Length: 566
Image 1 (cartoon, rainbow, N blue to C red):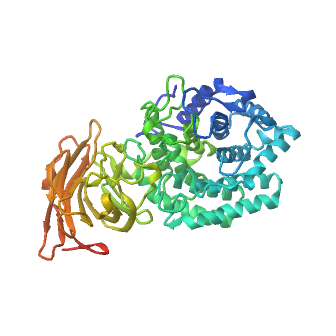
Image 2 (tube, rainbow, N blue to C red):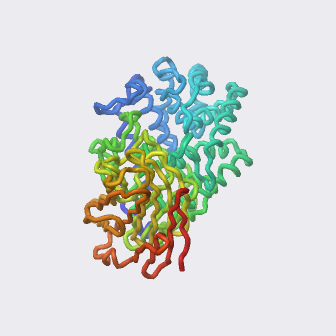
């Protein structure tokens, strides 16, 4: 992919300008063009993988997700090709939209693209094509979604159909129904769970906020925009902290192969004026993510997005991932809807949160503690509240970061009796430099976990109850890539070395404490010099950070309490 020369005056941190985003979009669109089939109604991208929805649905996915990119790019030539594909698709090529079927997902991308390119595409179509297209999309109004972000696909389709006057009553019902259902999953402070339970991840940005806010914005509905835009703005206060100084998004949650779709929420805030971020910070974070992936092999020699994270990587895929699935990354080009003279494109880049200062940020809704260090730009996410066992290991580990991937050897885990499972996660709270939770572990044991952090260092304490005396308990830390150092040291109830620490359960509850660190500093001070850890006469854990606060952790049958001890 050819990009223009870097501009380190306007963009001192990434070198990227609007021209880089335009060139990236043009390159991606040009690369998929040879794979059009059935009159351009399908895009069958190369590769042996087929999603669980089948090859026909995968081909529709290729059309819909790359159409979205053409719509953001406002590319007249590309839109002409997609107009031909639309005509062919609704003439019998595309599968019907049915209950809980993948075409419902793709219908939302098609409807949204048609809505934002109405003059360039929809209004120029033959009346017969428009009638067929509206009828095909109309099935989305009554199709039953999966109970998650899918509830918003009928909303998006309904918004377009209502605008063109197709079945206005059914469209309104679909919109109202979807918006009502997501209220069940709003957890506060700008965070949604992706359906019932506690599945907190990037679907907050590229689905749960994106569709309602865009619908409200396009409908010019002030009431809805105030509601959903206000939530988005609050969400971005936390969300901006999930990007490392190298541009990397947090590697947590499912559908990570969508890559720089992680930037959609950033652009959405700027597009609608619902953001706490400055224009220069918005572009810095978004361009950093784009550059991060393009510089690390996300696009292959043919110019196609691969199924993976950097390059091809099956560990980040799910059963619904087909050859064209990565093109939901098109959502990351939402910023191209902003005119070239908008401040988000003309302002000088400003540093993101991970570049400005060390920070420990409690995020109450998902019960996360975000830990970032300015010296190396790393961000760590301590997970004490997000869970979706269907998509392990990307939800239930104790910690994630912008530089590590969950390992097959169970990094960031408490392994009880050889069983690394962590289910039934119950959040116990977050605060200034700490987070706590309780979960079910191997053999029916119950583990109460507390992490306390300062700088790059962590104290991880786990109280294990309900297991036989003598049961082995292994505590693991980070698995670090080249150039990054991972440390773990025993502190209470454990012995071992930097590869992991182990102890054994006694009768009643047994406390295990380890010192942990992930750092990219070239010559960090010894980890044990950063903190004093001791058990006081009452059996409470006392943690005294060098140059920082003193905290006390009291474990009890109901969980744990963390208080300042000084």
